[in-house]
Structures are given as structure tokens and as C-alpha cells.
Length: 240
Length: 352
Image (cartoon, rainbow over all chains, first blue to last red; front, side, top):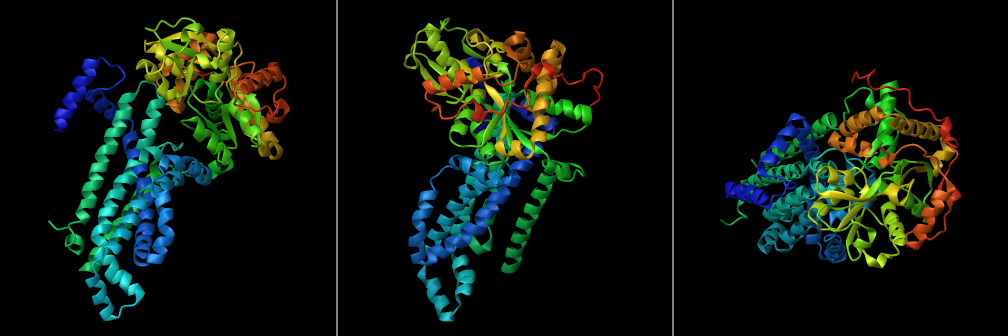
């Protein structure tokens, strides 16, 4: 399928006689050039750094928040409108805010990635608690657990499969916004590579090279998160 | 069993964060270079875009580093006007190269910004597709023209050209587009004409699908588009630093214009170390013709800005509440003939 796609792409460029749009060969040479200059590794590390921190913050804040909001319906009613208002706002719209708050440091793209990924995580955790089977709770109540124990031992575990699905989606989103997040004047990263290549004149091979690298790393990240679903603690949740 | 799984996941996560942070700090931030961290603290940042309008910024940086091994400021490259402007507003870049009307509009809105020197003169064009039948301004009737920003001087330039041709803004369709996207848009004939700072106009010519409708010098001689602006507070508290900055920019401008050899050398090192473009592009723009963009005669003159003010009011981007004395401080270089170009010759000190 991939081979077919590449052939069609190459043919389409040749048939349209476009000397702006790169062929797969141009892109491979573009990637080779980036490796040669030592830029590719630099940029991948920079992007992974920002996504790692933004995403980790989103998990650390999003999961507990989602569990609490899912459990206390009053808190849910109070906070849910706010979450639903913030959720559809594109990270691109937040760029000015990020620059004004964080300047042009790494904190600004991390903030944007955090914003993009925290909502899917929170929302999936809320939904997980709200859809939890009552039998777990009854059992827990019979054992007389404290609130802290209840959250850690029962609610968190019962919701883990759904939370991990949410995390998987959120990681995809976090990686998705890396281009937008790096539109701020950072001077490294795969998103920056794309924007920089547009500045560099006719270097659309590098633009597509950046797209290819983002796609490939996205694929690897998804494969890694899928591994989480294989653990005993959550496997029961995926009926297959 | 479960504890150990959770623990190992936690260890992997923390380990990964530590590893990627360390790598990023080492490779991208150069945090482990002994000297950089301490010095960077003291330097102030200047915002610029990879366009010829801001050329004196990297040239000053480069020549200073060649002469003294260091520079008083740190140039920060942006990729678009909004981000550049927001970084200035947030105080991250206390000095910046910026579109003259944008600086004036910011002043009208109460932002403490002062223009202290010009960035260049001329250095813009209106390009059409070589296959099009557009040869005069009148041929643009009903056509779509791309300009970088509503506050760009290119927009005012189009206004002025329309006026000269007896047309109005309603005769054409103006769209805003980031300059790096313009060549592709013209190539794909998504727009009929494009106008921005160089080198994006020269690029279409170099790649063989763009044709010059007119250069700025044909329609608006001594056209100003970008200026160097600094925060008002910086002028008050660090006047000597601003003076050194403006002196450096003025010397660079004179240096670039001193000879064609200097221009060609500029094209090489700026492309390589600052703009990340093919040197062919800047070489072309700085030489064909040589007066396509100029870096002398850069002191602030009231009549120039009054003309921009008037066009700005007519085109609806300025309200006329700020005047030359409000948005400029022309005291740093009053007599440009006294400015000497940098005493640096590339061939002698090619050791880098």
C-alpha cells in the first residue's frame, strides 16, 4: 500500500510537470541532507522534548482532575462548561497568549502541547468514572475504604483501560500540534523545520521531509502506547 | 507484581523525561558550554525576519563577532510578523526590526515603542506571473494581489501605485499572505500579483516564473518598509546601549553598500549562518540591479514618515493620533555622513 502510494505520488508530480512539489526521491535526498548536517537528530530531540513535557504535564494534571470531576457530580457541573468551552479552541489561537506569557522559550510550545492534550485525557477520565460499573463501588463500600483509598485502589483501576485509550488519543493530538507549537520562534524541532523550509525559498522537499518524519515518529509513539494495553491490569477492559 | 509494573512504568517515564531533557539541553540549548550561559544573560534580544529588509541585523552581529569575538545583542529570528510583534509586546525582545506602519500603529495604541533608525530603503517589488498579460498597474483591475500584512508598507505601496494610475482599492482584491508562501502562490496562479520584501520576490524571478511589474524604486523612490525600534524604557535607562546598537546598524549599512564585494560576502554569510537560504537568492537580490535594495541614507526624516502617516490614514490602518515626535527618536544618528563603515574586510580574516 505504501509502495503504491509512493509510486502514485512520484507519477503525479512528474505528470503535472511541477518543479515546486518534490518527488519521493527529492524528499529522501532532503532527509539525507538533514542527517548529514546533523540537523535531523537535533530536531527530533527538540520536538520529543517539548511533546514529552507537555504531554506528561497533561497526564499528571488531566487524569486526577478527570477522576475527581467524574466522581463528584457537583464539581462536574461546575467545571464541565468551562472544559467544553476551552476544548475546541485550536492551539494556534493560543500562540499569542503563549508568547505573551512565556516569551519565546521552550515553555511556550510545551504550554501549547499541554493545552491540546489535557482535554482529551480529562474528558476520557471523567467518562470512565461516570460509566464505571456500580458493583466495584458496592464492593469497595463494603470494605469501608477511605476516600483516598477509594480513588487509588478502586476508581483509578476500574477506569484505567478507558484512561489509557484517552491517553493514546491525547498523545496523537500532542504530536499533531507540534508544528503549530513550533511556529513560535524556537530554533529547533520538526515543526520548525517545516516553517524554516518555507522561508528558505524553494525547499519544499524539506517541508515534506518534516511531514514524513512527524508521521513516522507518530506511528512509533502509537505503537509504544499500544503496548500499555497489553498489561494484565488493563487487558480485561478491552474485550477482544 | 502490580507494584513492580507501576514502578517500572514510572521509572521508564521519569527516565525518558530526564534523558530527553538532557539531550535537548546539550544539543539544542548548548547548556553545557561554559561561557554561553553567563553571557547570554546580559545580552538583549533583537527580533528579525529572514528578509533583506532586516539584513543589517545579522550583518552587525556577524561583523561584531568577527572583530571582537562577541556582540552586544542576540539576534532572534522569527517566521512571521504576528509572532515578532508579540515577542516585542511581551518584553522578550526589547528591540526589534518591524514594519514602519506597524510600529506607528502600536504607538497609536499606546505601546511604548520608538523608531530609532531605518532598516533599509527600497527593496520591494510587485511580481506577476511571466505568462500573465499584466504589464501596467491598470491591468491589475479586478485581479488579486497578495501583501504580507495590513500594516505592511507593501500595502501602502499598492495604494500609492493605484492612486498614481487613477484607480482605487475597490478596483483590486487585496489578500494577506505570509511572504514565504507568496512564490508558491504565484507559481500556482492562486494570486495574480504578489508584493513583499526581498528575497521572496527575487526568488520567483530566479526560478523563472515571476516577472517584475515594478520595483519600489520605480513607484516610490526611497521607500521605507522596515525600521529598527526599541522600547522607550530602554532609551531612558540604557541610552548608551541603544547608541551602540544604532551605531552598529548604521556602520553595517554603510559596510554593505561600500562595494559589490561586500554585498556578495554578505549574501554568503547571512544565507549560511542566519537565514538558512540558498546564497544564490541573496546574491541575486543584492546585485540585480544593485539598487534593488539600499542600506545607506537611513536616518529618520520627518517628511518620509508624514507621507506614510497620510497613506496609512487614507488606507485605514492609522488614525493619526501619533506623530513623528511620538513614535521616533532620531537623536542617535543625526548626521549619517559622519558614520564610517565597519573596518572589516572578509578576505583578510576568513578564519572561521
